[in-house]
Image (cartoon, rainbow, N blue to C red; front, side):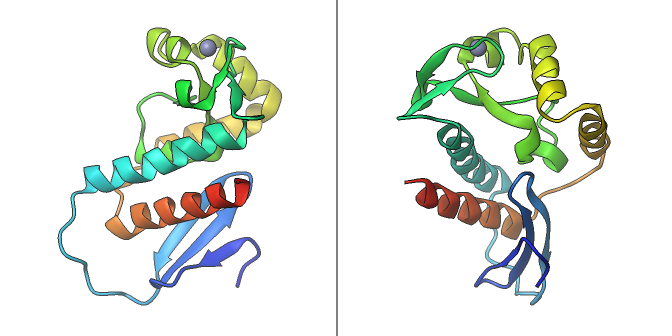
Amino acid sequence: MDRGSMCFDFGVRILFREDWGIVNMKNKLGLPKPKKVSISKLKKKAWDMFSKWVRLSASTNGYVVCITCGARKNYKELQAGHWLPGRHPSVLFDQRQVHPQCYHCNVGLKGNPILYYHYMENKYGKKEMRDLEKLDRQNKQFKPYELEAIYDIYKRKLSELE
Ligand SMILES: [Zn+2]
């Protein structure tokens, strides 16, 4: 198995990097298609788990700092905000560009993009930001097993935090 990859019981081979999140997934066993499930429901379920992990993994005693304005609040009051707008599937769950933000910055200021840019530049540098922009332009459509796997991975990572 590749370094950093994880294999799941339901036959999905996942390449996972601690600093990026999921790099890619393959349905190695070609499992039969499960009964029809709504992608939007699965996406919401995966997002809720991922968002909780983004906020809790950055927390101290349950408190998190908004990366753009510095407000310190209980993790339940903060959101997981994207650097690149649009919530495109190719970067929706990329850990590098999803960080804790308060409601005011994430929604009111539409991500507070100038300060978010500076945060990204300090944390990752321009090269990684350009890579993310390229990834953002790639077309991707989620398959149900991918969203299920994202849910499972971040559920596991959350249990490791506790
Ligand atoms: Zn804020």
